[in-house]
Amino acid sequence: MSRRASLGFDRRIDLEWLDAAAAQARPGATSAEMRAYLWNLLDGLVSGDKSNSARGKTVTVLHHIWGESDRDAEALRQRALAQLPKSTSDERLALHWAMMVARYPVFTDVAAAAGRLLTLQGAFTLAHLTRRLVAAWGERSTVERAAQRIIRSMVQWRVLTDMATPGIYAGKPHPRKVGPETGMLLVEALLLDSEEQSVPVGQLIGHPAFFPFAVDVNAGHVRSAAQFRVHRQGLDSDFVELRLGRDVGVR
Image (cartoon, rainbow, N blue to C red; front, side, top):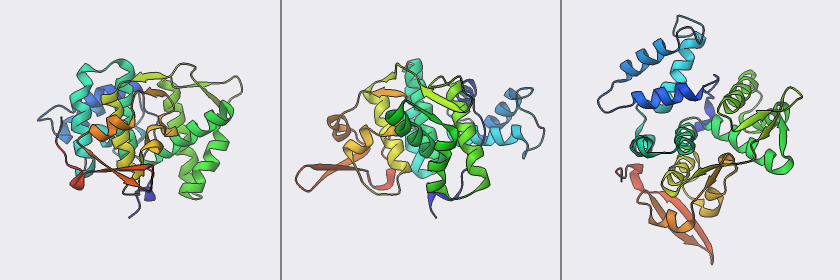
């Protein structure tokens, strides 16, 4: 089944909640414990007292990002958790970003559309971005809601800013600096998101979904990372894929 069969990410998510979810993803913690903690954390912040309420759905999104993952994303999650304690605030956001890219294809597509539009014209409307999203996801009633809530999350994270006219967004003038170790996890997340087995190295390093970040990563970093395999196609095209099984251990 296509990874883009279900949107899933249709809540506004605050950065503080992402930090809390990541902090709960400690060794030995269970999914039930994380869900209970997040449920209590959101009490009074998000409405609802049922699993299908806004509060319950927000807990589900946060748990899906930082809770136990399927086999493909678990190695990435473990590497991200290992990096969190030594990360700068900018890199911590990038680690959250990597997990959202790996777990929610709609997040990747919204981020990539925003990045392309910002590069082209410096700002964008929600309506324009939604039209681009519909091209990938089809005419669904939930697409506009997902786009709006992801964009509002990005505003709360301070990677986008509201313009004077409602519904228009601009990027921040200074990108967040991300070192090679964290940058490798962003690349890994994109490969997990991709429906292609291998992707050109340059396409990954300069991907528009990374628009908030100045990522200090080059082809040499990719070649030296244990989780990747790089191979040449043609005369001068390097392609990268995740190693077989996608279960290379944490370094």
